[in-house]
Length: 71
Length: 399
Image (tube, rainbow over all chains, first blue to last red; front, side, top):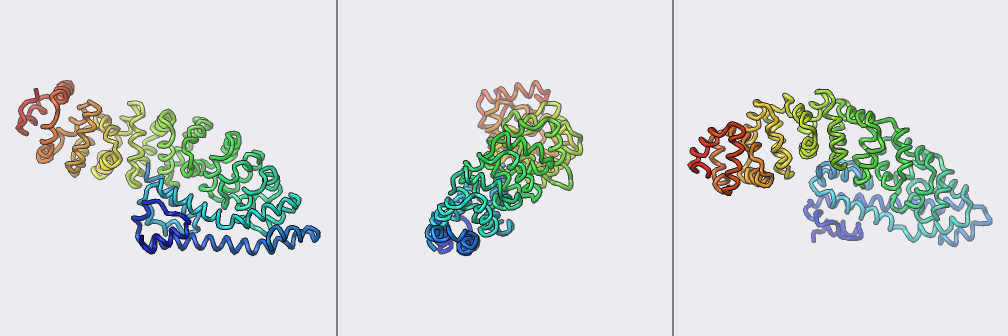
């Protein structure tokens, strides 16, 4: 298995369809990089949102909500 | 058709990965099923990536009143995270939240959401609210997103959206991106004949260039609707037909168009096939290429007698570049369909050097096939020319 294909498989969490084996390494790398970037952006937004959300929660509820969120 | 399906898939994947469609041009030769599988894998990966944390968010939301959830969702979480959490909240509560969000924001959420995860939520959102969001998405030209939701909303909601969404070009593009094409029959059935005709006219407008979308729609509906839409197109003026033929040529869409022409009434077939543009050799070469590469000889051959003499001559000229394998497939299609007249149209107009190449195929004809061919040659009044051809190819006269 080529490095590019195994990188894509790792990023995807499963093997891409067999037809993707015919693609050049640069295309596979581009797909892996793009998927990785979207995933990281999603994680960063979630990190930021979880802390930001607490400011809107009434003081009384803040403790139980933080506990559930694992903060 | 597969070409159009591949194009739609590449656009959807570019959307998911937030990259420009042109950067995925290397994928355009892959089959649509593989592209779709990959897109679903990527979508699942993004959804699963933060599932544990998202579930905790959904759980915490149970402690908060709906208006506060809507406020936090819109002002802190943003569209992407709201989309991820939506499917994890109880459907009744999630639907209630949608009523409290700004319509523009709710439209942002739909861009990020996987409708498969919120089927139950969508079913609980009132139709007028769905229409509001759909109109915002249409105004933003978010046709991929609208198409993804078509599979998950009720017929009433679709009818209401189509009544309010007067942009026919938008409807065509939504249909193009729909994933469950089997629902197209129902949707086409909801539109009055006049609106369907207007949709075809929009496809033909030079400024729009939507024949790929229109032909995709005609190709995906069942034969009844394909014939209906094809007849509506064929009943329009020559400029529309010419624009359709030119688009089929420029965008390699003859593979989608041939089966539609095959279903039309004879008079409409004749009108279309006698367009002067069909006397151009490059155009006919493209038609022959599509018939061969997409296995459509059985659809094309019955149309050949309807071409006028100059077009038949041009067709024979275009056929000169077919390989021996392609001629083999022509003969197979003729033998399967048992109609020899259309083949004779072509055969008798080929140059003698090309006819010579067909000697092995003619020699292999069964006695029954040869008899049938002769019978049809007689009916067409070309018996003497077939006879001469046989003698020249030193095959003797067919029994």
